[in-house]
Length: 120
Figure 1 (tube, rainbow, N blue to C red):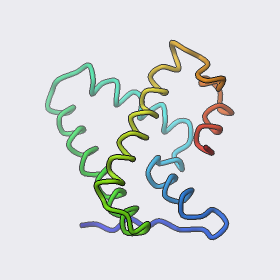
Figure 2: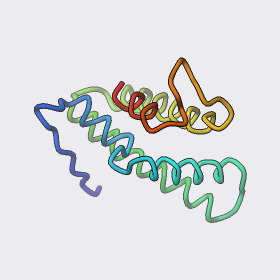
Figure 3: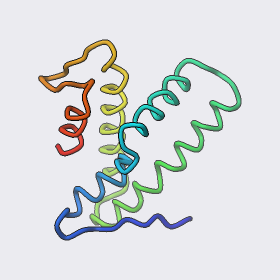
Figure 4: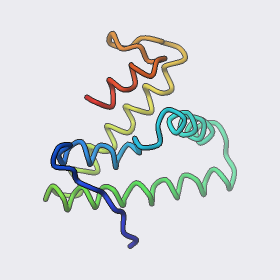
């Protein structure tokens, strides 16, 4: 298994550091839009490229789960379940932002709104 480096900042704490690792937050807003486009294609297209992309996404998703499980000394199945809920929720919000610009009072079409989501 390849190693994934995650820097745990004392100021930031383990939760925030793991959140950054799991969400790929360092990619910024442009990374979110690329991710949305790829996920939309995964849901609407059926070809070898999409199958390969889905397989890679699954492989890549398992690595951070294992790391967070080790760092938090939590069972990997619990971390995987929580990660699945969080990533599916983020995917839903990204997909819905075009149809519903505001969700629970958060402006989903602004950088500020997404920063609020990431900060928690």
